[in-house]
Length: 439
Image 1 (cartoon, rainbow, N blue to C red):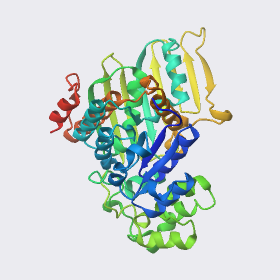
Image 2 (cartoon, rainbow, N blue to C red):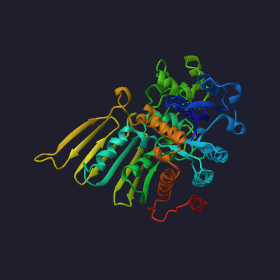
Image 3 (cartoon, rainbow, N blue to C red):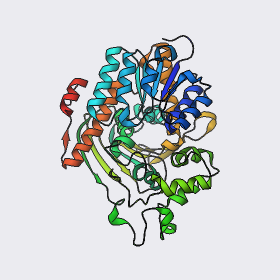
Image 4 (cartoon, rainbow, N blue to C red):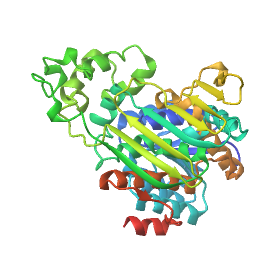
């Protein structure tokens, strides 16, 4: 328990660190320190939260030397592969941990994180926002009330969006597995986590199929150049960088993301320079990307439910879509609406549409660009409440739940790469055993 507002140090002041910091403040917490190597990002967060120079660090290791007097908890929003080391260190210092998903790209690192927080007895939560969405609460309530009988099958789609995929997974920081993680881990670990939360069971068998089919040199159009600004066919390309990023000007949210990843200055001159010299001006067919651009995961759960999860680059930018089939009815939902079909509505099947609204009546959406339907804010509020009260019952995405969800991702990737069906019944039950299996 803590007296007064929970004090949080931010490790990583990129887009997610910046946005989560503001959510922490809106939820009653206070940002008291930041560690960020990029001067511009660090100074921006420090200015927004009135941090003195002695609370600002270029390296989280330096912050760790002063953490006891500065914070009760840390928010880890560094790059994916840089989550484990600070988590272990700050757990040893007795600070509570709120970690952006994924926990870590590799299972031994995730297991090491859990072992550290359990050994230290600190509160740990992963930002799996889909668990915390009011939309999720509604769907789970309908299922638990028996409105569709017993769940038999779930079909879940993550439509990444063509321009979002090109930005993040072809040109951007999550384009290569050796520098970040698989697409399934980076983009969908919380989708597979959500399925387990909804179905209330863990998988026993997993298969997966997919690959990198389009964003390759072989598909570069005739006459195309390796940079959009030099390209004779750029105007007709669906993935034109100039068209995408120029469309962000004057739009506050899109200037914050994705434009801020391309250039810190939202001007035509700065953007032109960034597209001429930086990674975001490259032709999507001439990058060094290797993550898949489409993937399907098929799952059989311990309670007999079957499910599929599909992630694809080749969609409009839209919400996740889910169809839940039960013995007495079905649910179709997309974060904005929940359509309930009741097979018992005689003489014809009836349907009820429920609009999902959030704070101040705003429609909640299920995609990351729209705050995960308020799930990010709710997840952060739950963590702060847990730290303030010592009651971890507020946290829906603790260490064990998160490790299970991540292990589904690793199993699915193994199934895809080996073209096999992975049996999951005998999965290791401790972090040490999990590390031994991965090793």
